[in-house]
Amino acid sequence: MFAHRKDAERAGPGPLRTPRLGVRAARPRSAAGLRQTAILVGALGLTALALAACATSRSAPPARLVSTPIAVVAGLTAAPALPEPTAAALAPTSTTPRPAAVATPPPSPSVPPSPTPMGIEVRRQIFTEVWKTISEHYLYSDFGGVDWDAVRVEFEQRIDQAPTDERFYQLVSEMVARLGDDHSRFLPPQAAQRQDELSSGREEQVGIGVVALPLRDALLIQHVFPDSPAQRAGLRSRDRIVAIDGAFYASADIQGPEGSQVRLTVVRPGAESRDIVITRRRVEGRITPMARRLTGDIGYLSITTLWVSDMDRQVSAALADVAAPRPLRGLILDLRSNPGGWRSVLTGILGHFISGEVGSFTSRKEDTPLVIEPGARPDLRGLPLVVLIDGGTASYAELIAAVLQSRAGAVVVGAPSAGNTETIYSYELTGGARLWVAQEGFRLAEGADLEGVGVYPDIAVLDDWTRFSEAEDPGIQEALRLLSPSAGGK
Image 1 (cartoon, rainbow, N blue to C red):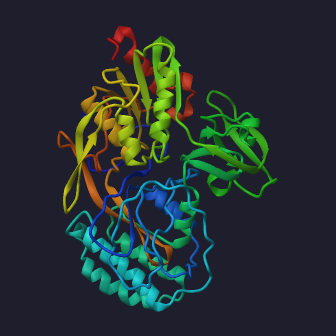
Image 2 (cartoon, helix red, strand yellow):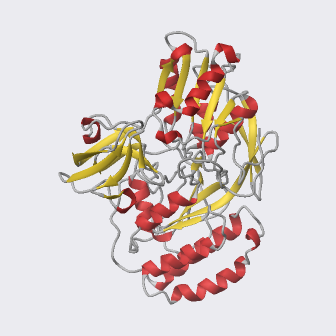
Image 3 (cartoon, rainbow, N blue to C red):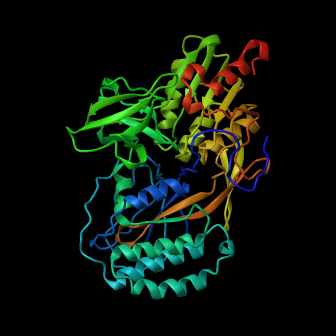
């Protein structure tokens, strides 16, 4: 069921609930000069990358690139790959984007930026690309009440006077922020390069070997990589890192020079805090779904992100393994704090449970139906489902929950989701910067719009699940109760 609300605040206790993002494959559109990619995005992920950006720009000539889905994920998670250029470099003459869809490539290597400052003509080119792209493609024809022509006049004068490239990028960011939609964003070149480096779902870091979710008071460990310093130290998922080298976690860095030591204060659900000293080293790991068979032949599948480009295939393999011994009587799909990801992953996962047209993406120019093709294996259509969500469940993770709730009879348990479902297209700009523009909304087949609303659970469980072990998790316990024979199996 769905209930409309006017803001993103959630009642009751719980983790930090910040909108995140998801991704969908780009569609060709008429225009020239930039690479375009469709994504769903929340404020925190882009802000994190923007803060990590260096102000220096690349001196290489602008390249005309092609589009592919990407994502930015806040905190310690990585982002999918961007493609290498597929056309020769061009002089900065065209100011209108022309996207072209391509298949997903392997990760691109990072290219260190040049310290050479931009010339005024390059600045004006970037500025014009940003303004014109928003003017032509922004989801709302009235720009949310903003006089976009007046914004151009104001910032056009200011960008010529910017004393440094860093200040120029800040001004462009301020101009985009005038839209006030918490979706559209501008990213300087080095932040975009960092996004490229963290690319294929394989995390590489010099640190302890974990993927963690930033909460108000701790880092929640979601994944511990095999043979990593963290695994050797006995850390596991759901452990909370509350301090790093004696300082509040947000004021310190879990990563650092290879061979250096870091002291972590860790709290495990149901246990006292303890200090652990770990030696950092270079670690590679793969983010994967977590699946297991619980008591009563109930399957449990936890998916922490959808942006790993083959996550749908990983999910298929995990479901096949769980269902192999004997048929499942029900499945718990845990999407809590899942920030979204690739559209192919969205459709691939949904294909295990439903088929047909389930909604549509809407824009100023056209509507695009979301159609789920049949044939995913294992075929779990008709299987009793419980979907777990919270305030961090965003974008395509929200769509999975909403579609299964409305079309597959799934019972949704937890707290309202983020309500962050506008599709954003990413454009590659002259000099290596990147622009996200909110271009599409989404409506379920029944007409419900989740943007700013979110998915409301059928059964509210507002306890902070991050403070419980899996065995004592209130959401999982409620799901098991619902799927038990005494509850009718659903």
